Length: 210
Image (cartoon, rainbow, N blue to C red; front, side):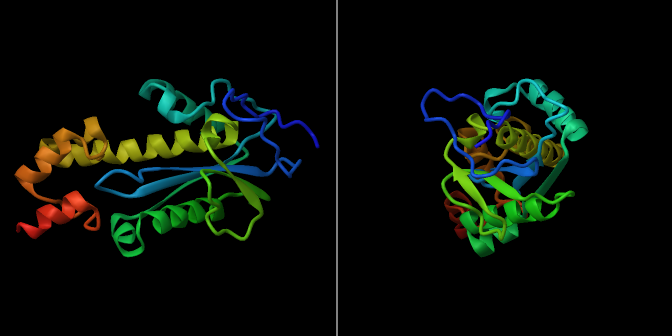
């Protein structure tokens, strides 16, 4: 089996073995399972071995400025990339688990050229027809998954900044929709917005008071 140049050495896991040796391996990751508002966003990335990108690691370990710089490099140098989402309404209709997989499948389907193999962050594949494997802590173990995590994080954060401009009293630019004390206090004071996920317990509680 050929050595994948995009592998990241992770001290807490054994070396990642991938049953694919071609160049159309897509890393897949998502951002936004935990927030109370907005879409869950997924990305899929096929990196180009001829155009290496330094510094690809889990997006959560990067500053916002570094993520945005890498986001631009990924979009310029990747063989293919796609960002997709499942809306708050779809999260409510399907539940967050199935909505996350829907967003992932949409991102995978939008790749051009198409992927031949998937590496998906987490412990479950998203139900796509393509072969692949789920990789626990994948965004810290393979650069393609790290790249996907960066694209998804930058895209979703931008959505929250835009929402913050419309509703500054909620503080979305700071907490990005996660159930922080600030967000819960604003939710109690101002009530849920259309974009809030009505199936999530803190939002349900506020809706019940209306």
